[in-house]
Amino acid sequence: MYSICAKCQGRKMLCGLPRCPIEERIRAVKSSLLKIRGREVFGATPPSAVVGEAGWPRVRVYIGEPPDVTGEEARAYDDPRLLWGRELEDIIRLRSYMVFGYAAQTSPRKLGELPLLAVSERPVDVEMRLAKTPVESLRFDLREKPMGPRAPIEALRIDGNPAVPRALDKLMSDDLGAGAAAVELYRRGVDLYTIQRAFALGLLGARHRRRLVPTRWSITAVDVAIGDALAQQVRHMPEVSQPLYGYAEYLDNRYLVAVVPGPLRFYYLEKWTYAGRVAEIEVAEDPRGVRSTMDGGYEAARLAILEKLASMGRRGTVAMVRWIGERYYVSVGNWQIRETLRRLQLTPLDENYKTYTALVGKDPISLIKNIKRLDEFL
Image (cartoon, rainbow, N blue to C red):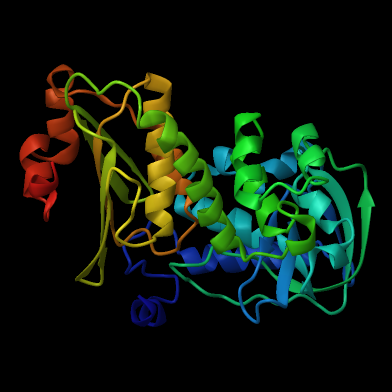
């Protein structure tokens, strides 16, 4: 893609996209830098917090805020439920506008009130004084969400009180294991994304063992813990009475899901198409819950489908296929998998045969049975 970008320079649109993503990102970054007064940034964190991976256990903890955006307006910059449905370029623009201050630490205890900002139920106004002028690293990474300009935090002043969920506030003082705490919070109705940030920032678990956990690891760990708890319930529910199918698409990601009568088990196939090349990821899970491999995308998809089955009071054998096209050139995070599949409708094929055929391009039964190994699995 970058060879095309060098020739195009944002003018000829050789990539076929309606707007140049690099130009959009540069404009967003410049706009945010203009709102910084010296090295001071004032705005509200949506909340937005990221724990990095490099150098673990001493890692960078980032807190993000859109300059001069305060109150509830800030929520739209990093809330998956509000971001879902937007175009990819809009998501890149919003994320790139946020300024991220960071601190490098080994223990959550040394972060002061910063973790409380990240688990607030509402945006919190924050003034950050940065140690130097923030810089932007322009990267288009299929593993990392886009981030705006960043710099070390010199000082941080909270203008307001973080609204920590009551259930989380209680568990922060307990010694319950981090996975069990995540499940308990989910059962008590705490937002999944708040739980993920709490896990990453070391607010859960046995107090003497709490550590900062890189955000990518924490997201998958929470999906696994909650998904396993849901699977334990669904495993003993009655079977679906007939095959169910669902189709959804978002950001050039297309999903086809089938649930057929049988024990609770999963097959997941992810197919990437990029620059004429195809790559595949396969995950199979047996009725005991044993996976053939660990994959964050699979765990996000699995959680969404388990939520759906639990709400139906039914179990079944599940096949999920995710196609990823070339227009998904920047990863926005596994939330888009989870939120897209949460909105997918599972219905008997005979009720929507023509609709599925039109969406998928062919008879979905033939399609799903011709996918690699899927006919054997079902």
